[in-house]
Image (tube, rainbow, N blue to C red; front, side, top):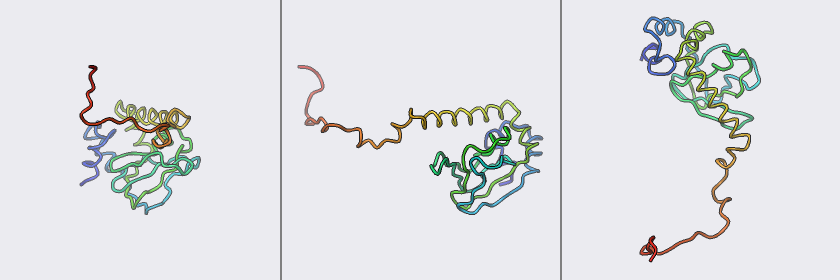
Length: 165
């Protein structure tokens, strides 16, 4: 599939005009990352591109813990690129991965559209929800069910009625 056709299937590129999409697609740099390659380092240098996974999978890690796994069509590096700050997670190739790299000037154009702003906002919301979960609210979601059971289960025979007699 051609670059423009691929990008057009994924946000925030799906809302671009055909001319803007062609401009972005024409400037894309393709880069291969072998499995386990660190692409962006948590608290390292800011992202220099907007990255889009073309083929493969990308891990988002914080302190060695897996936060998310990104697949084809998903973008990363945009929060660091927009803010000029260090990435808040380490980004590593989970398998051999091919990415489209979009230069900052064009990334700004894409992310500055209403669809692009909604995309960035969604990323910020997801990150805040993950942070809140890590702060304790989501601890129950990472707890094995077996550790919460304090008594034997209540059982009954299949012919037991659920109505009062």
